[in-house]
Every structure is written in C-alpha cells, then in structure tokens.
Image (cartoon, rainbow, N blue to C red; front, top):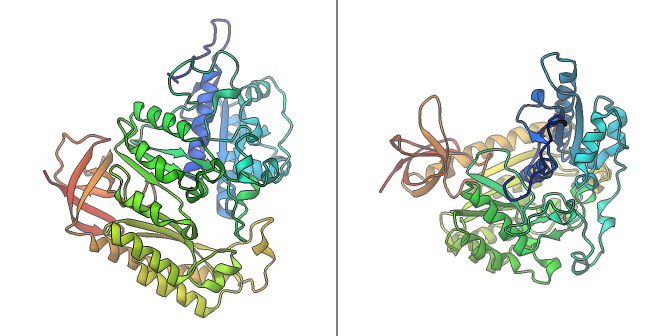
Length: 492
C-alpha cells in the first residue's frame, strides 16, 4: 500500500500470508480492502488464493438466508484446505456481517472456523491472526444491537463514532504507520477493475419491518466529505475510472453532519477529482429523494444519470406493513421527475414479493407498477423471515411454495419488461466504460452510464478494434439488445 509505510518481515521472521475472500455487497468489498490495507501495513503478504495463504479471512454476508448459507459453505471450503496436503492454509477466520450478527452462536455451530470476529476487532485484526497462528483461539464476538453504540440524535454521532468498517480512518493505526502527508487512506485494491466502490456512510436509521441490517450495522453515520474526497483521489491514482458511492442509505448523507443536502454539494467535488471519469450513486430511498438531488445527479458533468431506487413494493398497504412510505402514484411521479431532466436515465430497483398478508390485488398492483415504470433492472426477491425483525411475527405468512410461485411470476414479467426497456435504447448514443476484453469473441465488454456494476447488464462493443483497453471510455451507438444487455458500435 504505497500511501502507508510498510512493516516488512526481517530475515529472521517468516513471511505471513493472508487471503481475503469477500461475499455479499459492494459495501463488504470496501471493508475487505480496508482490512487488506491494515494487514499489509502490519507486514502481512496478501495472496489471491486461500490455498496459498497461512490464514483465510472470509468476509461474510448475513443479509438473507441464501447469503448466510453461501457464507457458511465458503467457510467450510476454506477449512477443508487445512486437510489438503497441497494447501498452505493453517487457519480460517470469519469476519463480516454474518460474524457480527451471530458471533458466538456461529462459532458454536461452526467449530471449523478458528475465530469469529466482529467489527470491533478489525483495528486489531493483525494481532488476532498472529495469535491464531500461535495456537490461540480468540474469544468469539458477542453480538449486540449496534444502534445502542451511538447517540440517538444524529448530530451527536460524529464525536462519538469509533472505528466503523470501510470508513478508512487511520487514527487507530499504531504510531508511525499513518502517512505524514497525502491522502490518509487505509485501503488496498484487491482487483484491477476500472471501477471501485467508495463508502460514503454506514448504518441506517430506518426501521423497515423486514430488515435486520440496522441492528448489526448500527445507526447511520456519514463519512466527512474530506475523507471521501481523499479516498476518491487515492482510487483515481490506482487506476479507478468510476467511483461507485455506496452506503445503506445514500439519501441520508450529511444529516448527522448538519447538512441534509451535503450529497448535492459533494457530487460536483467528486466529479472534479483528476482521473475519475464517472461518479455513480447507489441506494436511494424514494421517500427521501429530494428534487435538488435528482437535479444534481441528472445534470452534473461526470455524475452519471443513474438512480438506484429502493422501491421494495408498490401497493401502499404492503409498504405500510413494511414500515415504508409511498406507493404506485408517488413512485411514478418520482420517475416522471427524473425523466423530465434526464430522459435516458438508468433506473433500477429491487422488490419483495410474498410479504406477510400480501393479497392477489396487492401483487397485481406491483405488477401494474412495474409495467408503467419502465425500469432498466429489477431484482425480484421472495420474502423470508429474518431473525429479530418485526415482519417475522406478522400475521398472514404465505406458504413458501406460494412465495416461490410469486417470485417466478413476477420474475418472468420483469424479464420481459427489462428486455423491452433495453430495446428502447437501440439507436441511442452511449459511452461505454470498458471493463474486460472477452476472451472467446475478442469483444470489449463494459457498461454504459445507465448500467451499474455487476448486476445491471453489460454492453458489448462490436468493431472497436484492438486499440481499446480496459478503463477506456468509448462513445458508441446501440445497435441491438440481448435481454438486458446491449450491443453497440463505436462512433467518432
């Protein structure tokens, strides 16, 4: 990590190696890169493959049931490496949301893990890993509601906040390790992609009845603008062309810093960071999306007109049971405002079907909304009970088979709708950020401005020539659609 002084092993000290395996969302990716920076600063050598590492650190996801299962499966796979004579792995450590949420309970049920560590252990992770390699077993994290760690009033939180994963504050590093000048960033890139997530806040103050995230991620805390800008500059220095702003609720950014419109002020500053070509904002709450924020996202050069709207449903009655606001009329009016200032804006969302008490009429209203909304991407999720949430105790729970049937029904509708929306973009001019060159066809593959990372589809560039490289921004015209994906040809 070239922004921090490194502590290298002496000739008498063996090199310690660690692999970070990241599951879940882009916010977890930021946390992993901060952990990577901390460990590299403490003298660890980072490797890509857990089989080549003394310690495999698995950054788990604990959001929904399938994510929990995937995290446990990966932990077990890493533990199996200890019995593989060809692998170097000596220890497996669980961190991340699953570890924070379940802690000692997870450790009891998963003895294959050598440690289950919560967020409060991140600052001292190097010492924990050293102890594990010496045969010790650190005490497992004891879960607690992290909302209790900060004052109720948002304005009182900045002075009380401790180390928050992904916020990159170097104040807790040992003396002499933080840089004396330059961007104060504790992070190490773990991939060579031309885009990177950049965390602007953590936690959430909303109380959606289906969501457990606030209990294990804590209350909402904004990162100071100067820290966000410093990390953006650091990312640009490391080849990043698009910064993807992430949080649990980006529309709340700044409320604890005394300025609820701080995001509108931050975005133009981020767009001026040398080397960054794109700024993309994720996770906007419809009820908190202000006209000024819409205008800023839609009209600021360098900020892509992309709106990641957390609708979750459209029937007002379902949304009230979810403890959310709005409904079909409000959401369509918001989409009209967005498209009035940015006709080609990308809009994506997620919806939950099969929520307790959801009637056929409410499901039909959701379907009618999706038809009218003309969204670019929609993730369709079936409701499942989450530990400690209000929704788990609501009346009217649907049979799991019925939930699955509704997921299939809405999913099929969405597949047709997003394909139609992609077809509408044929003939439109786009600018494609090249992310890779396809090995089979030799075609550059990237994303247009309306396409977010990983889950929003891609754009294939036909006839781009061999001169196109990863990280290039290529102007093109869309000539075809393949489901949610586009095919485009470069233009001068």
